[in-house]
Length: 210
Image (tube, rainbow, N blue to C red; front, side, top):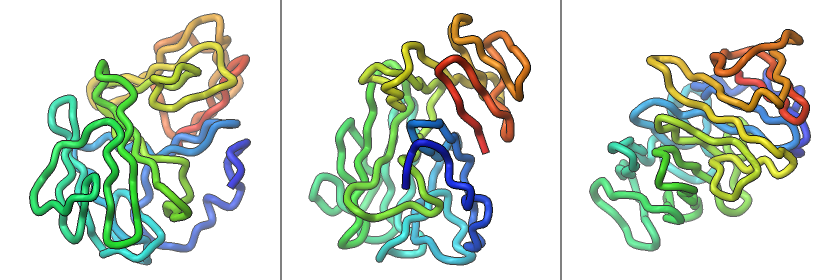
């Protein structure tokens, strides 16, 4: 899948399962927004109500990722290994931890900075998410999109950064005024709420939450 823009066919998927909120960042990729305290992972097939579905040989419900303060734990429901060691109880994840689900599927847990409780889950190899994603974002209290290597989503062509942060039950966006942000064609001042369906554009930024 090209990450230059979201595929037009994404809204026409026929697999009836829970769909995560997805942040589409033009020129960068598509990211599931997982902002609940527990995220279930399992196989992609019709009717399977998991938060993150993977196309591959694994159980209906394989594991749960749970927020624990500023960290995350992985709880096995079926065969799960962390860094090559099989686990039978919840285990704390560290930056770079490799989570093996079943016998063939691997995920990498990436926590770019200890200053935020957010992290990124990446599939290793040729396995694919359903729907197609670049990665899943396990959201803490804030998440950074930008060009720096310690961003949760690295946007190499940007010269500024966007910070997503919680405000009550909602997500807000903070961005430099020089970014000239417009929502659905209308200029806005930051911080502003991140609302599903809105098209956010700036001199460098173009993204939508679906």
